[in-house]
Image (cartoon, rainbow, N blue to C red; front, side, top):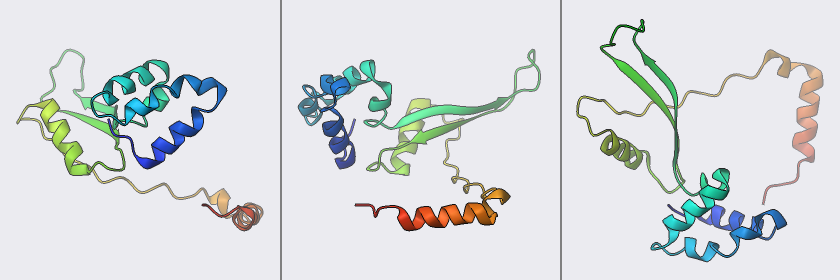
Length: 143
């Protein structure tokens, strides 16, 4: 469990909202390495989305093996969607996954992220381009 600056600010801000006042008392304990995991687990019990901001998340999104239900496949592949915290490296995540798998016969490797899909041809229509330009010009600067 790691609390980064952005998440810290966000949690403190939403803890002021009526629906999240329950969050204010445990927040200081997130800063203490001895109590942080227990507090993160308490937060997860109340709100899984908030808890996902505190830890790297892993979702097995694609599994592939075999071609028939009654035949044991000789290979299998699992693809995981891993959302890592900003202060974690890809190398460190791969090491953790390898330790969890704990099988030298299983290859664990990172795949390069695919490029975002190209915009729809409809996005090139003059009317939509005009809206995009308007939004670009009227949007307030980020701070």
